[in-house]
Amino acid sequence: MRFFRSAAALAAACMVVPAAHAADHADPAPRWLSATTFAPDHAFAPPPAPGSLEEKLDLDRLRALIAASSPARITQADWDGEHKEPAIFDKALGKDIATLPHTLALANLVQDEVERVVAAAKHHFRRARPFMVDPALPHCGKGEQALKAYPSGHSAFAWSVAWTLAQLAPDRAAALMAKAQDYTLSREICGVHFATDVEAAHGMATAAAQALLSDPRLAPMVAAARAEWPAH
Image 1 (cartoon, rainbow, N blue to C red):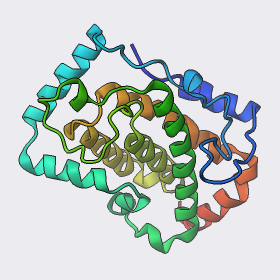
Image 2 (image 1 turned 45 degrees about the vertical axis):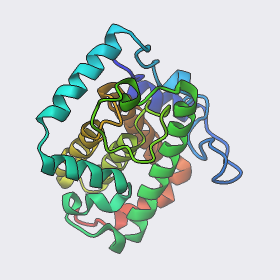
Image 3 (image 1 turned 90 degrees about the horizontal axis):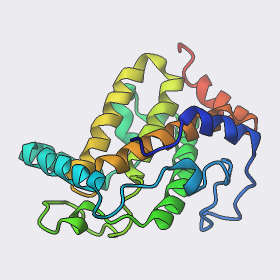
Image 4 (image 1 turned 60 degrees about the vertical axis):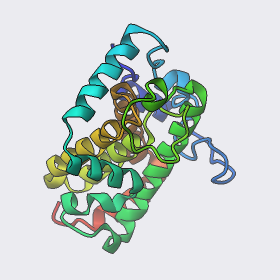
């Protein structure tokens, strides 16, 4: 079973139903994406139910992953959890994104939109984090809100920004996607997300980024970002 809706279907539907601008950042509604298309019940399948076989399999996989992780990888996972900004892709991108203002602005917009979708979904599904399901599970979830596991916000950020940057620098796509994969795995190694939380974020994030870069209203912003990559 997969725990996200079809990325292609979401992106297509988003172009049919344009979103109104949110009043301010405090409003969780998307500014650009369709609030209908990216509503929790439309963008995501429900997570595994508490006590279900699916949840047990999720937890068993997580225990095995954490047990097999080296101290260095756990330290990296903890660091990743504290860093949720486009600059984490500098090495994969081959450039300091801070020196590319239009690229950074586009990445920030995509991240902001995706975070709005994730916030609504977390509030809707209220899934317990792994360390709440199994209090004995090692974790680095300092300050993580207990009932906000699904979907993974860090994973949605990573996949959406990586996909966006890959459209600007396709020759860096493999490195960007590898970084996103490793970064999202950190959320499991940290014990703050199940694999299904991460998987759900991946599908939505890719659909959202695709829809945003295809939105005619954002065409000037996308063009300005592309102009910073003349050889691509």
